[in-house]
Length: 269
Length: 347
Image (tube, rainbow over all chains, first blue to last red; front, side):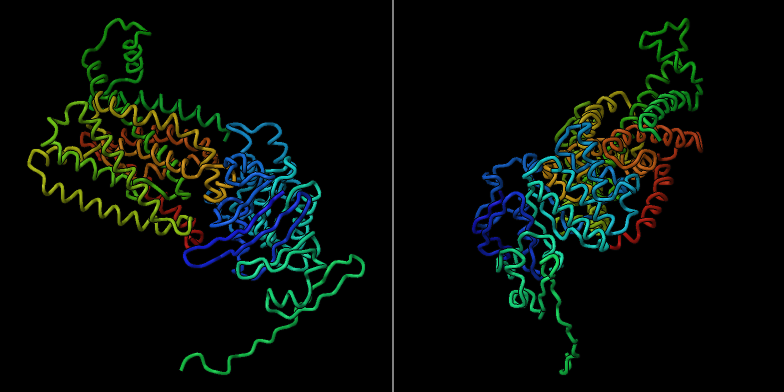
């Protein structure tokens, strides 16, 4: 169980997070939605223990995040960040193995090697396991990073998966496959929290959606409960229609077309 | 190439190059005699008649010089590899980014103060003081560059290189200032020291350098895994349970210890820290678990060979060894720059 209570966070005078509380049970897949600058990534950094909140508490399995040692925490939660620049031409399998670093001292165990293989197959990166990471396309690199993040907690149900736009840069097939993997992790009793931009994918794969705006939690509920034209307008300031797919009963969101109008008043005088 | 094979090839090459190098010079001594004389000295083999002249040349002049080349080469190779790991950048070279200049400044400052504080640098304490001072200078500079070159927690290559230029200029100016203010005796010491090279090798300099090189060579390979994680980014390394600040402190301390002490005894030998890890990565991949120890070996080998070339190319005149390493290293630096141009401009 991941529980956060009255989290606030500020940098200088700017309050990035205001009074956020929720808890997430093992087995839940939660999508975090919100416009740019709403505080989604900041929230994820608080949940991962990278940043310490000004106020409020974060606890995982009933224990405060602060009370975990770095290695203990690495066994219980994994993070996929938005930008991943690797400085040297490591091989793909070497990068995925890094996910197992918290689990061994000098030499990876047979179990570590096995997990690396399994995860590489699950994420479809085993075909380029021997290639240099730097020669891959953006989407392929993202899948390798996903594999590394999954390898870190693969055999540890109830662990927390924090994903910041995990499908960024992927083609449509891998977007679906990645979310399907995360979905199946949730079914294995992992706690999955993922920032997404695509509301349709969120509706399709998430059990629950948290919508954020200006550092606050605005909506929190199942896709059916909270995805409607009113909430979407409030959060994203776009007009949209929301349908329900009659066969899957999932929401389909269709934003209205926006017509760009040239400013009538000149910008400079 | 299989990794074990690389270690074997490097170790054997060091042995062979070492023996050949000891034989080379104004008085040529065949490799076989060198080998037997050393065996005789350590008591494994009893030589029927010992050539006294050769004996003196080997054990007073050439062997200390060889050992100094090995120690300094290992120091420059391993610290280059480790510093590149921490800076997350294959262009981070102690000489280029000003770490060596910081070491030089401290060493010159110590020589400048020496006349009033100490009796002379000829004693072993003087060498240790010099080596330790240079280590402190190198450490402070490394931390400074590290802080300057980071933006939002990410290292910036361009800033790092530019800061290196500035630090090199600043340390150079301060070194020049001290030189200018120095007394005649101090000036003689400074000039002698700045000429650097492996020419000043004695058993004393070798003994001074041993702990400063051995400790990093033994302890740094254990940071290999941590430095691999660093390649993912500092934040990502933290997510893997790594104590990022502890790793940073440990690696900077150990690598500046090696490079500082090496600089304090031989002057700045540029491009070694760039060239050596680069070749190792081409041979055995980028896993720091291997790049770090193997860079120590290749560093030693490279400096033995560079020293041989510097002594024999236009004999009897000796070329500064830095000329040889720069002749090979600078083109490699340019090559990496051109290869990574796109990537570097993105940073």
